Length: 297
Image (tube, one colour):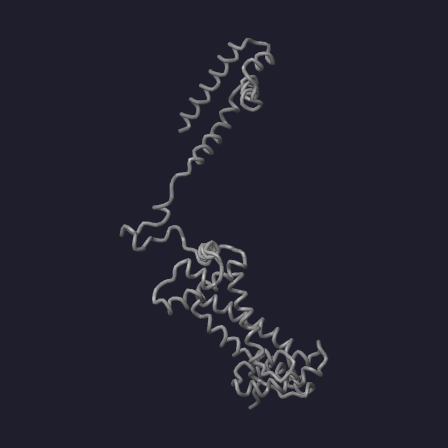
């Protein structure tokens, strides 16, 4: 009884045949599952693929096959380097981001590797991968953006602190950190303050620190207060409607007095009335607006 392939299976077979054909044309073996090649085999195969990559024409299917296979065979290097940063990855999603960023470093290493120099590819590639990942943490993971100089200083301070703790058997002082790094105490303080921008927490998170009152109050409860400007905004909003209820002359008087900052005498001269009359008009207008605001709440 004859069997037939599904559409998906037929596509897989066709892809495999095409890849096998490209490998043959490139003078290379077809590596069916390059991602799962052992590190030992990857080193041996990588050398062969790099040799062919130097003579293949860039942009051809054969060149792409060799380059893509090199990337897949050496992804284990990316996972190895990324594993060093596991403690700094906040969650699984960020770990995936680290692997993707590290893969960019791997691709750069493949494109720049020169087999004639006699260097093993893993030795050449790891600094590229590490550099991309460190750049990712430096530029993309700070909760608050700070200058690169302070980002680098944060790392130097952490390393210096670790060294001094081992020597002193206690946390070093600012003066000791400054002496260790040959910088001023002001620079140390600036770096320590900038380090606070690396991570951020929600204001509504419970305060469980040693100085908390045990009631689980949030920072919003402790530090927050009513902004006095909020009441001013509400009053201005309410005042807009009340001003529209005034007649044109009253609005003009208010504009001259508070908009143009004219004196009552100047307003009187502008309107052809006495200063006393202007004073009574302003008193009446302002009292009306005040009553309206009080009624508004």
